[in-house]
Amino acid sequence: MSIVRTLRILASQRPSLPPRALAAPRRVARRRHGNVPVTWIDADLSSTATIVHLHGGSYVAGEKTAHWEWLEEVGRRSGAATAMVHYRLAPTYPYPAAIEDVLHAIDAMGEQALLRPGRWVLSGDGAGAGLALAVAQTLAAAGGDAPALLLLESPWADLTEYAATTGGLSHAAARLYAGAVPAENPRISPLRGDLGSLPPVHLVTGTEDEVVQDARRLREGIAAGGGTVEYVEIPGAGHSVALTGATADAQSARRTQIAAVRQAVGLDAAPAPSA
Image (cartoon, helix red, strand yellow):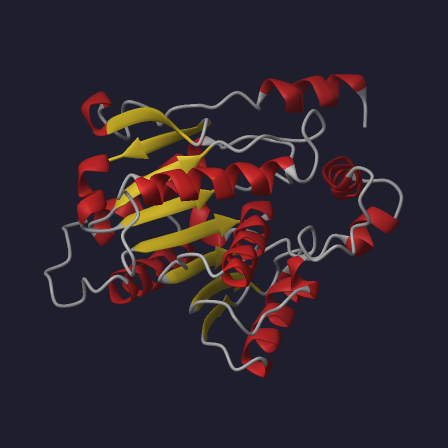
């Protein structure tokens, strides 16, 4: 990885806020939970339901405008508060910093009654989806309060092949995130962990997604473990299709995600907020 590219990645690691044109400042609040920065949109709706989101970026890059646009729409149309967790990133903070940050934030939000049992969703895209999967497995093993739904898109959930190869950004990111820990560790590559104790999962991918095999393996593993998974694979679509905005495929994916959230947190009987 070149010095210039590394500097660009590091420059993108500072937590951002949603653009004002997307969410008026009165709807946005930056807080710290468990000493982890978290940005809320419509935090007052947490008494109804909350979506906790873990952004993608290969564990080395922060959230982008597309993440905010997706999160604002899915939260608003679901009728839920949304919380973006700004977990620490490699290379400065390799594993286990990210998973520790998310667990600390979730624990603190639960203690503050911002995450109500049966009324919160853990979501993630790309590396964030892999991280969400690892967090859910950790919560299940510890007997912690599980999310009502895991909302995953294009999960990067097995880093072993990428860490073992040479060259390319995915290789560099996998090595930077894993650090001195073998990538086979199931908290780094949660596809190798327990898939039978997960909460219900809604999983979106595209047939042209570079990590589509992770999504397919995850679906198969959950089903084999007796879990529940709603699987949406969109023909011709690429990575993180729901994040791509106003395309027909993106909107189709988002509709399935919004419906899954509302069903999981018990909002099906209430009128859906207007688009």
